[in-house]
Image (cartoon, rainbow, N blue to C red; front, side, top):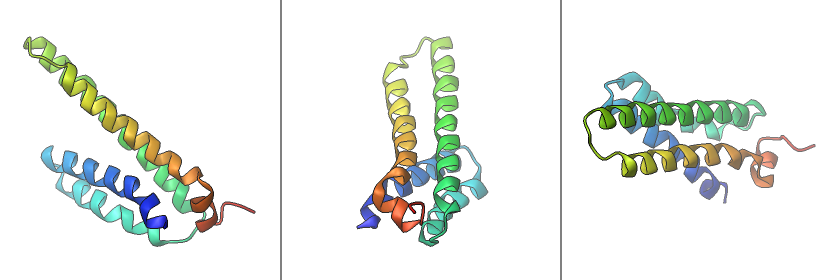
Length: 113
């Protein structure tokens, strides 16, 4: 059942990996694809590491949104739909970080006494 709870987390990293690959950051893209394997480690530090990484990923989506919106505005191109999509991806990534606060995942990673 934890596999279903991991799905948004894994999807967040795969989306970030695709973003990094498109930007030409091949090694970071490979890292994003491999990082979810750490979910199999049952240690207290795993959720905190993932929460930090997911918040950083959401910040990257926000940075990308800002840069692309500025570029599109400068060229008088529509930017609203792009901003909505990237904002939703950033929000999804942030919400994925909150999944580690659910009772099942707290129990799995021994965060509950």
